[in-house]
Amino acid sequence: MPDSPRRRRLRASALLAALVLPALGAGCGDSSGRVTLTVLATSSMTEVLGEIGTAYQQENPDVRVRFAFGGTPEIADRLAEHEPPDVLVTADGASMDEEREHLGGRRRVIAHDSLTIAVGPGNPRRVRDLRDLARPGLRVAVGAGTVPVGRYTRQVLARAGVQVRWTSEETSARAVLDRIRAGEADAGLVFITDLRSAGIAASSVPIPADLNVTAAFPAAAVRGGEHEDTADAFVSWLLTPGAQRLFNKYGFVTPTAPQ
Image (cartoon, rainbow, N blue to C red; front, side, top):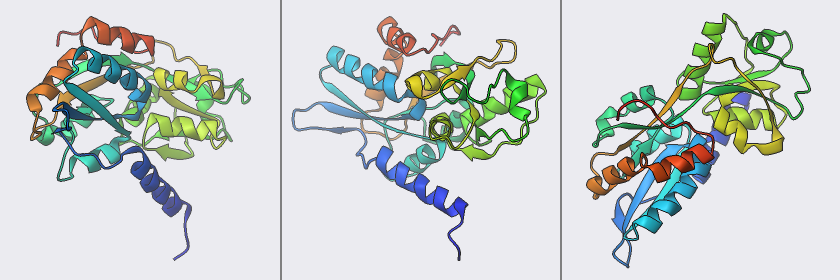
């Protein structure tokens, strides 16, 4: 059978999952007696959780935290494995609902975010607003309808009354951004914090607040781990002032709803 573009993308996704989600034993301890927590998280939190893990370990020297990042399909695959992680962090509540059978501790929203239109450096196609995404010939990448950024994107486009014929559907906001950075798409909707991570490799076109969404990032301990209480304590710590300052540093917004 010919090697179709879809097959090549699936093969590439499998390779990315293997690189981003290395084999990890859940809830184990090391030779020093420290507890090791494995946190499986949305790739949109790669940078901030890296710094948060360091801060947590400084306050809790008896706990080691390590992270595995990926899009929703990779996260679902990992949760289905024999040795699940200890903590799950997703980019919307629907993704948590899909994995409720794996969750043990109480779910908490640890950060908020919104969407922006990502374009090439300097905005070479002169995208001005959401309506321009419907322009003929503009290559638009979006998240698939089954992943958080894709669900948020469809809400924004519906509010704006804009119908877009996108050229690709991706597994995460980072994958949408990668399309734009590689010059394979002219525009796409991503989380504001993802756009910030791209630096000068991409530019942004703001979305008006009345058309935008408030994206909620929930976290919860995973049922069945050896250290479920420790995992739940880590999730609670993510809402402390020190942790929230780090989320704010990377552009995330502190949750205002009661937890």
